[in-house]
Length: 310
Image (cartoon, rainbow, N blue to C red; front, side, top):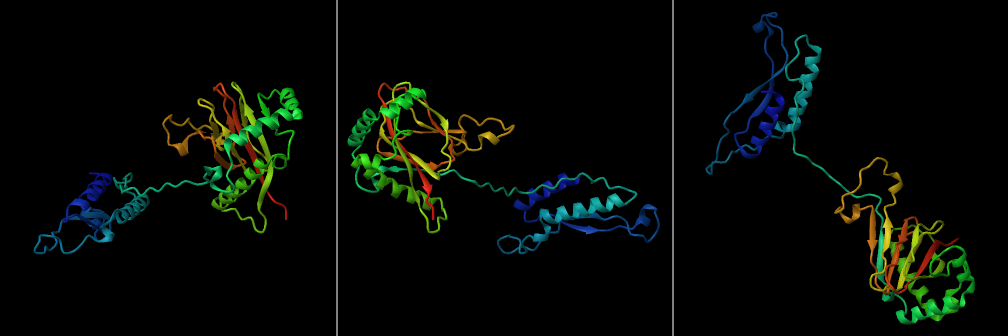
């Protein structure tokens, strides 16, 4: 029987049999083998099946000693291999395996946090219908924004490149900004940012109107800290928000994930917000809006927050 089989058998018996074997290290006299009387030979194992004393309930009085565990055997096996390598008579136990109970520990690191809440959870109440009407009214008057969308092939309308004063143009956008400030502050606290004496402040706020067939390709928001969107109109069948694993460019030769992989292990995650929701994420997270398959417009208001200067 090789040492690997012996150790595996011993570990299993130690868990179920109170009369488990104990292993001790011994030596023999080389003279027995005709190699010189009185000289010490190589170490070896002796198995002892001594029966311990029993109490009235038939249980062993002496518990198993820790030195008889797999770690002790592993140490003896290592010693045997070292002594055998130095000897002219190698032992037949050179390739023994030590079996032990696994002690695995898996944790998640470098987590990507996504914040989701109702816009009206903080700040003054915002009426979605009034906000939608205000978005369309501003879009109709914003000729510079319409021209930019047409020149750049942007489907629908966005005020990203034309307007920077929505909070001044419409009182309801001022209420939206107040609510967003509170949500971003809550998210920053969850992220445990060390902001010192500075705070996160609104940098950009813009309207998005995507008609049927409209989409917004994958992108991120450089030079910002927190980005997000609040949803004004989400008709049935419209597109979700698609988030991409930030490590996608570093997966190297990794195989693809299973289709039914856990949500926190998927390469792409689709968020399905409803009207009145606000989603926040760190600005380095790549995201996109797939094609709007609904007949009606998909209306939202997006924004960036930066770390205020001292």
